[in-house]
Length: 217
Image 1: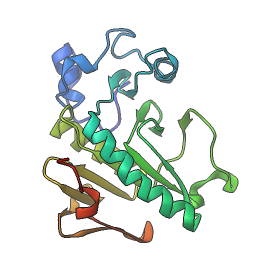
Image 2: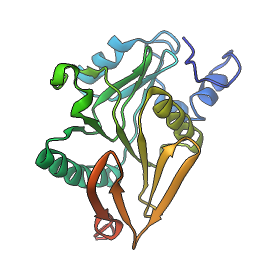
Image 3: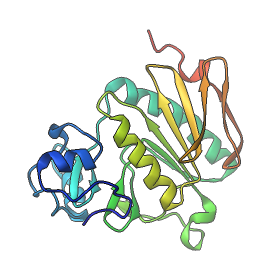
Image 4: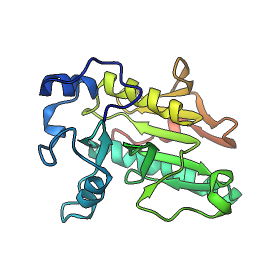
């Protein structure tokens, strides 16, 4: 079923589908289940298979999540700072690049990092489910060579439409972090500047020189 945020015309060919998904390469879309017929159970089945492949679910289509070693390492590094801060102040929970989030019915995304404040826990209790049905306050995406600009623009629209409050796009190649507070409102930080948690994580700060330290080692 097409997502409510889809702006492209109806899909008639595989090329149409790839364009709608963000001009992604065809090797990220499996043929089984057939594009347009996939469901959440297929995402779980792939995660539980021997090779544990991660797929997002978009417009009834499985889309493989891509992340190279360098980007994965950077996500873990940033995640370590977030987890330490969130646990120290008992603010909520932080998930990594295998945390599946249902942004809306039929739309599953897997941000590289996500922070969910305790205030969003149902009954004050952390949800225990392979697919989280709670929208994070903060989403972090470490840009990978396999991502396209159009794909990331689409994700940005979806995140804010679903209720995410802040999105960080981390660019390892450029050594920048772009902080979005709305789809069309952002600020780009460079080395020498400091990333902070804003109103989501008050008091959290990490210099980009520390975040990107030893990247060339």
